[in-house]
Structure formats: C-alpha cells, structure tokens
Amino acid sequence: MNNSLYARLRAHFPDPDKIFIETDTGRRLTYGDLEAGSARLAHALVARGVKPGDRIAVQVQKSPEAILLYLACVRAGAAYLPLNTGYTLAELSYFIGDAEPAVFVCDPKMRDAIAALPSAPGVETLDADGRGTIMDAAADRPSTFDDVSRERDDLAAILYTSGTTGRSKGAMLTQENLASNAEVLVRYWRFTADDVLIHALPIFHTHGLFVATNVLLMAGGSMIFMPRFDADTIIAAMPRATSMMGVPTFYTRLLEHPGLTREATSHMRLFTSGSAPLLADTHRAFEDRTGHRILERYGMTETNMNASNPYEGERRAGTVGFPLPGVEFRVAEAETGRALPQGETGILEVRGPNVFKGYWRMPEKTAAEFRADGFFITGDIVKIDDDGYLHIVGRAKDLIISGGYNVYPKEVESEIDALAGVVESAVIGLPHPDFGEGVAAAVVREAGAKLEEDAILAELQGRLARYKLPKRVFFVDELPRNTMGKVQKNVLRERFDNVFSTG
Image 1 (tube, rainbow, N blue to C red):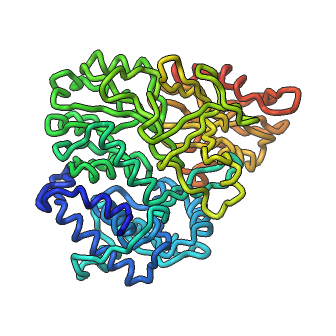
Image 2: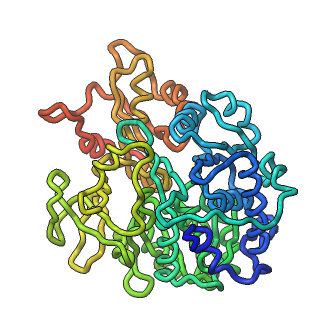
Image 3: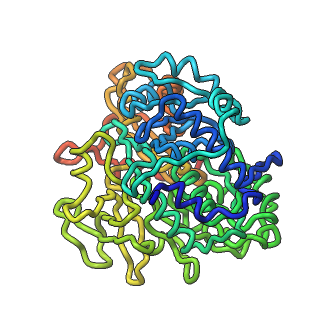
C-alpha cells in the first residue's frame, strides 16, 4: 500500500472536470489538469536524475504551476524544499550547502546567479506566468505517472526555520505529518467539496502550502488563487467563495476597506487566522463589521497545526483554542520539564502525528528539542485557562513574527554587529498595527561614530530578506543587562513599546 501524501490526497479528488484552481485572471485548472500536469513534471524530474529521498529546492513566484511542481516532487518520492522568495543569494548558498538538493527551481532572472553559487545543483526555471525550463522539459512527457511508493515516516518536505544562533534548521516533515494534519483540519473546520477558498497566501510558507492547499485537496474543493493580498480583489471574490485563510495583516487591511460589510461577506462561512497573534481588537472589529467571528488557530513549522478555536462553540479572542484531535499538550517548566497544573504559565510541549521527524542533519539539536517520551518542546510560553483555551503568552527564544513570517533576532543582530561603527545590537519585536510585530533594533555605536539609522538600513539591504529588515533603528548608550550580563530585551520592549502605534 502506498502511504504517500499524494495517494492520500488523491483518494479525495472529485470528478476530473471539477475546477481546482481559478486565478484572478480567469485561468482555470481542473483536477484532471492537476493530475496530468503533476505527472508530466514528475517525469521531468526523474529524467533529470531525481531519486526517492532527494531534495528539490524551489524559490519561485506563486503560480498554479508551482503547486503542480510541489505535487510532482511528492509523486516522485522527493522531499519538497520551498524557499522564501525574499531570501538573498547569501542565504540561498547556505540552504544549498546544507540540503544538497538534486535540483533547484528558481525564477529565470535568478538562474545565472544561483548556478554560480558554490555546490549549486542543476538549475531549472519557473516564472510567475508558469513558464520556464522545467515546464518545457515536462511538455511532451506522459500525462500519467507511476507514483513512487512511500511509507508514512518517509520525508515529504523540509522547511527551514532560522535558529537563535543564526544557523537555519531544516524541519523534516513526513508523509504522515502532512497528510494526517490535513485530514484533521478538513473535519475540524468542516471543509467539503462545496468549499471555495480565497487563497492569497504565499506558497513557500507552511500556511499557504500545507494548510490551505492540502486541506482543499483533501476536501476535493476549489481555490480562487491570487498572487498576493489585495483587498479589492478579495472582497470582489467573496460572493463566489466560502472561506478564507489569512494572517492578521489581511484582516487589519480588510477593515480599512469600505467594501467590507455584512452583505459582502454573506456567502462566506469561515475566516481563519494564523501565523501571528491576532489582536483581540481586530477580532471584535471584524465581527462588528461582518457578523463573522474569525477562527484563530496555532501551529509551527515543526508541527503543522496544533490547536484551533472551535468551529462550533465560542471562538475566544486572544486565544488559539484547544488541541486538535490526536494532538497532546502539556505545559512544563523549561528547565526541568516538570508538568505544571492547568492555569500556570510554562513552556508548551506537543506530541502527535503532526510533529516533525527532527532537524535535517542535526541529531544533537533534534535530541535536545524532544523529551524522552516523544513530546516536542515548542519554546512557546503559554497557559491553559480554566475552560481549556490555550493562550500564547510569549516566546522563550525571542522569535519575532512579523506579517506572518518568522524573524530570529540573532540572525539580524549578527549582520548589524558586523557593520563598521557598531559595538553591539539587540533586535526585538514591537507591537505593530499592521504586521502584528515590527522588527526593531537597538544599537550601541562606537565612540565618535557618525552612523545613523538610514545608513544601517541601507547596509542591510541585500544581506537579509526584506521581511527581516528592521523597520526602526534606535541608538542607545548601552544595552540593559541583568547581574549575569544577559541583555534584558523586555526592558527595551517596554521603552519602545508604542513606537509603531504612535508613528
């Protein structure tokens, strides 16, 4: 029996003539097109020497063909490695060296630069219009493919998540991790073949790819596929749609649009939010305008979705609800791992079929992040209230989530500290009305240095993806420290707390 993610998705595919993707330009891709297109691409990958277990790195713009490529990788038995389109060449060089992909698929404009990187694999191209060398290679291939058989524990994908030391870690996600999570979400969120999802999320991220896309495939539903968030386009699509998955930024921007009304959203049955904390004020304002209570949920790169507010029952603002079916939670002391009673604050630990296999080629790091009984130590500081709702209090590792993307302070600090005239820096996340958290840096200058905010931001351009760049840089005489010499970032957060809210 083939236990691959694709086999489990395909078992729910409807009639091949049914529309799976419709783009904002009117292009339509049926389930039959999906089967044939992914088969041709799988043949093309195998013809280029891709073997089961190989990694396929992909840094491309959003397109229906990019979804076909993802499915082709799974069908060929390879591990799909999506990369943020904002990553710089320096960042890509690290991923290539660490993951050693058999093929790298990129935008045509990046081909020569990536091919020139050390240890670069064979490079193929795919642009935003679905054209490129990989599509040319697939054009004359058969429209059927004998899918590679995979076991539940075999890899389906690797997602890189930056480490607090600055070194990115590849989270290894198995066929079972992705398939089981999609199956649970379909049931928990009541998705059916009648659903039409507004898909405006990026597909290099777990939210847009493994939550949105896999769930709709598992339900046999359809997607209105948009290249990016645009409030006008989304509101215009709502009369034809039933659901939308978004990040808090989507909802704050929709609330700024005069077209967001009860009438406009009357055909919709579900709005979900994740990837960053949703402010309770945003939750209430959206309900006031539309009559819909946003369903907030909680997941991680390493675990897929862990928790969700209920579909039926109270969707409580400021919480992420309850553990999903099959997922176990416990709150523990960070230092000892001792389980804490309900209501106390500690580190969330998670166990379930959704939890990843470990970090790629990091056995020691993997061992350090798991308890002996299989619970994964998330690093998130949480509490579970008397009614069982999970509250995310903070992040023990100082992770910043800005606009739904993870930013690890150490990575940004390392780049700032390397600049001439900088003694040291501390990077923090501050409340931001649009992005949830805005990246900010406190910098200590060398005596006599004339370094200014604009100069630092200019120097960082090209060294870091845009979403990692500080939105503000502040200069301080010294960084606040405790008696052990550790920087007290909480003091900095309190000092600059209202910077983005006050402009």
